[in-house]
Length: 211
Image 1 (cartoon, rainbow, N blue to C red):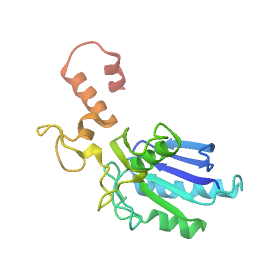
Image 2: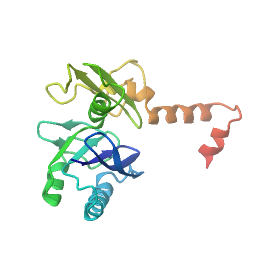
Image 3: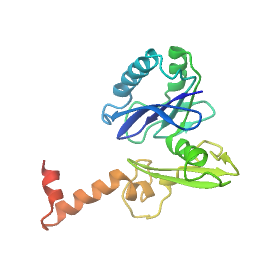
């Protein structure tokens, strides 16, 4: 029973067909237009899904989506993206179910990543795991006793938004000094830019920044 797996991140989005055993049968990825957000990505995602399903290969039976931002799992609704505009209260699964007549499930991408590691990767054989993902942002998934722990508002695994420096830089969530504001891919790039702007030490990174 293959499924279509969709990963929507702040830097890239990916499409795959995956077997029940976890074998990747098909895979493609492309860069995300972060500034244009949902209005740029949604038409492309639908078109690529349409093309993939029209090929008739692998016969996927469902769609699973990992989204890089807060998701209300109970209502299956994207609440927002902290990195791209236009994702507020988007019922993406409902739209795809109506168009493609396949069942669809969506969750935060770090929750999905944690489940993947628990079932097929480094977490196999363990009853409980803590999963961290460091990418455009920082996220986490918490598996306790074989069950994904989401909390009462689906936000239990937001490990990137734990403040660790009260006078640290502003975070996209509205707080200051969160793990994500200090340790994410965007944060590391920001700190590199600031170091280059403040210093005079020769560096190949300065040439890259100027270009």
